[in-house]
Image 1 (cartoon, rainbow, N blue to C red):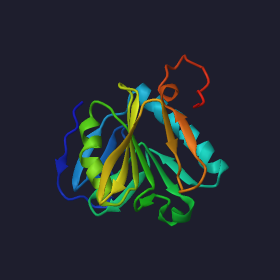
Image 2 (cartoon, rainbow, N blue to C red):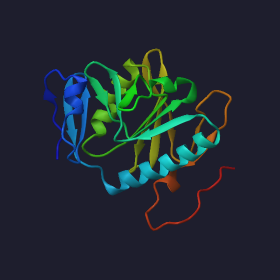
Image 3 (cartoon, helix red, strand yellow):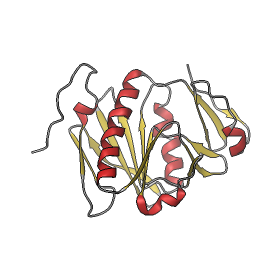
Image 4 (cartoon, helix red, strand yellow):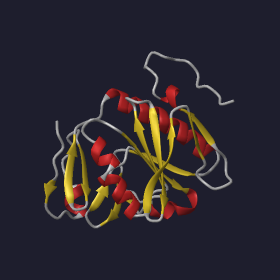
Length: 197
């Protein structure tokens, strides 16, 4: 199913009243985008990565992790629903019951055929415009994570992780090391993640 934007102005109230029908709805730069439910590998990767980040951030008291469906209200006409998003403890005032109001510290999207172009283009531009400091794009076909960091008002790719991805939510704080091939392993592979040398 191709995702087509529906052009009109959208208030958050109108957006919040869209049907709960298994599709993902987002308003990006004032246009409504509808995306079908994610694939099984998409779901597996998000669940695995979410579990890793959740355990790590809770163990160290670093902040809060959310997964879709949970809205991020960046501004009027920009209501997005990233696959995963993290906000540091000292910024948790932007977390509300119905949505996050402001830029998360980390946004993660897993590519799918219907969203790949938008995740790499329009969404990256909107995340940059609203000051998201770090954005990961996970490509399950190529078994890699493109890491984008905010610099000069743009999210620029600073790393392509194909082996291990190292993440520090706070400068000088604890580091999470993610085994990329293990993250994207087959559902019947119960091996343990590797440790970097």
